Amino acid sequence: MTEALKEFVRFFKEGGWWMYLVLLAGLTAVVGGLVHAISARRATLGLALAPLALVLVIGGIGTFADRAEVDSALALVSPKQKDKIRVEGYKEASRPIQLAVALAAVALLPFIAGEARRGRSS
Image 1 (cartoon, one colour):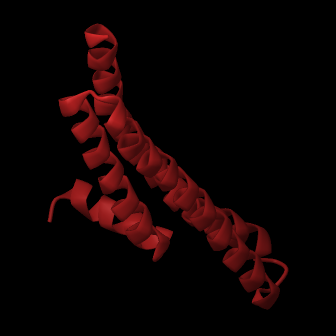
Image 2 (spheres, helix red, strand yellow):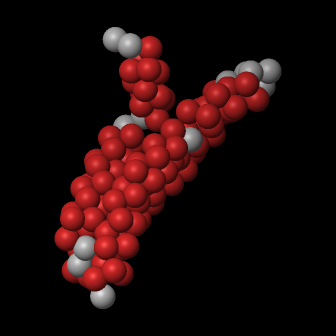
């Protein structure tokens, strides 16, 4: 396994089970963007925008849920270690929104291309 792949697997594991939902919504957003880029019709606008918004919402909810888990776990930790564990926990809790933003950015490119094509054909 390459170093980059190992790093991505670690990143994905740190985000927890929310990462699967983000990935599913993100891939759907990319497909929606591609469909809109190919057809460039008003009818595919919602098909492209809905999953794009959904991936960001799921990423945000995942991050907040993971942060809540970190906060509840801090009650079980000695006061000396709380700050260190909070910092690391919040870093890992931010993984869902980080993945969501990356996937949304990828999905946005074909969406913009579709809008440009749609604007030229009007």
